[in-house]
Image: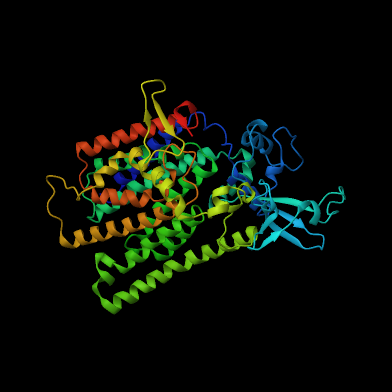
Length: 510
């Protein structure tokens, strides 16, 4: 089917409507109001006011609205802190100290909650180690209203990459903190399903995919309702919004990068993907592979001519990606004086033990992350509530059992004729390139200090699910009854997660 035909467009539109309706129905109590975790709204408001920091965590749930507050601000603060019963979740911060000699330093006391001399260790944002005793070494009188107070203040920042906030800026400019991030996230989730169907139709039109139109809808249903995309797309909240938007940008990138068709657009989309979810940086490997293996052949089989063509495409791809990267580096420098620091080290003011002691990435996290990503299963019992799920999340195979169909050789429909050698070579090359991209995106997450807790299923899988769907569609050439049964089983699992996660806490354990 021609992906640009009227019939194809109508099916894509129908998919968008169906996914939107199902997501909205399963988001029933989340949908009416913005989520409590409004970091992107706050960052958008900061951008609109020419700032890269925020004063939001200084506010209190029971405080009164102040002059100049944007619409919905105090209500958002009350939601975020559960009426004052909870703290500020995942806001990054560091301290700004003025020493007696007048020197101003910025950083954190990572061991401030411990006893002994290490509590005086001060790690500056530019990487220096100092020893500072707050009670003795700070200047006084920086605050004209409190001249006796020590020169010690806290700066708060939103640590998450900024592109979702940029997208939300027009809405925040109009609606302020009443901007409903749940609705926006849900719509991006539906858009991803539409983009997947468009991509599958295009692959079919290129002769690389043999699935019928009905089976392509099965594949879209598998992604939209049989993966962690469902429970992530229906709740808003900064973490899930970033993941869901990242999926949409990732699909757009794959559409532009397949066959190295549109290098400038692919580079721009890759950059925006990194500005949404930093792991998408590693998806960049897909474009040069497509350029180097033109038509499935190394350099298109044209030697020096093919090498020059591939180099030109890769350079065009790198240009917009680098420009977005430079903008991100400047943004990071403006906040943390480090172009490579997005700020996650500064969560809990740098005192989070795993990050403080081992860094954001370390092989020490691998075993635990592998369990969360692959092997975590539900606990079943004969007593209510019968099913218990760890808050570290179910593994990807438990979430989407249809992936078992990937093990073994490529399946073919019984009536399928042998593919043409050229098409088979192109298909095999595309599968290889997508699989490499999946591995490159997945690997850093397995070394990350956080496995995604709290979650129903391994949510970081969304970073590589678009490429993985391509691998699945191309490798599983025939959706047999067994494969469809596994898809349906995955949809049942995801329905359970969409309904219970964040609502029915008795099903979950730490």
